[in-house]
Length: 444
Image (cartoon, rainbow, N blue to C red; front, top):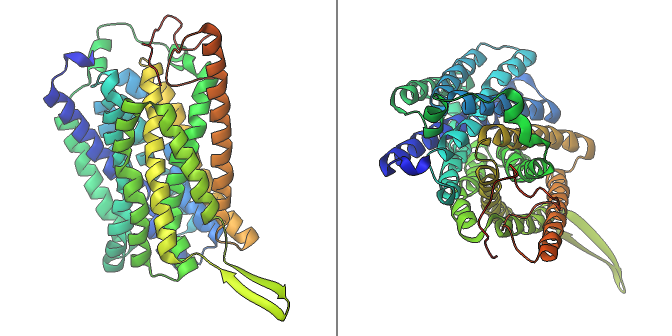
């Protein structure tokens, strides 16, 4: 179906969806900046601040499931446009909150912005053939740079106007884009084709979720995306607490993490098309294990009992080394985000919204759970680096499960004396969904 579209139609759809997702992502992470001022005004603890930052991520995660289903059913044009208008109203209403519980309720509405991801994935992938989808979705996913827009620009708005007017500015910009999208975006080819046929039932749309591979993809995304969102929210607070930076400097440095973690997703999509998502995921997880291990080490004073007395020395990570490591971590996580979503339209072309919605929901739940866990760990352990200790455990577990899946698939392929795909799965008689779907062999 996508082969019948013109290049100009593809570029139009990709450009509009990417820009819209960028604005939505900027709104979704707004509490990484205005939350610091709110915490100061209300004297919030680390746990309370972590919950405030994480609450929009919860809504954005859960909403991805039904938004994905609605996009499969009604098309991305109207779902995307209405979503932006609804979210902008919620952002504006947030400014009327005067207590912490009211802010949490308002944050639930702000979180709808995060659901825009699966709407854009389903809308964008429908315009491109399978061999181009990795690159196209990588470009679309670069809209994660919206977190950098907030980390870089919101501090200046916050200082100049206060957090309430900053939120109002965000609301007006997002509402304008919602209207623009409805007026100028076009229905995708799959939506146009569905209008002439029968609609799938809810159970038919959700059928692929019985397969374990969907949930394994979700675990990958829990780290590469969920941890990205968590760090985008947490880094300004971390930098101010560990290195004593002011909010503007902390926001700029946090942007050095979020920019590569967003823009290099384009490269990740191209590499997944070119080299296979298996290799990209291996590179991502191995590099992330190394980076999170190094970042986990807290400043430590040592006393060695020497021959002539005690020998004292300290180990602490300097700010330049920390910035370099999070830049590297962001780079590889961006590759991984693209590689995970390369899987979805390849294996489930008729269920991109449902499957992608579940994968995105679990990844987004990582963005909800991790900032809250970071705050709790800070309060319980008193160690700032505990956030990276937790991330190290998650990525190590994901790497081990993925490697088990790879080796299981390879044993089955060796037994059959053929290689069926470069995206290995758990050993199963049913390697692909649906049963009669065939993929071309591809040596890796």
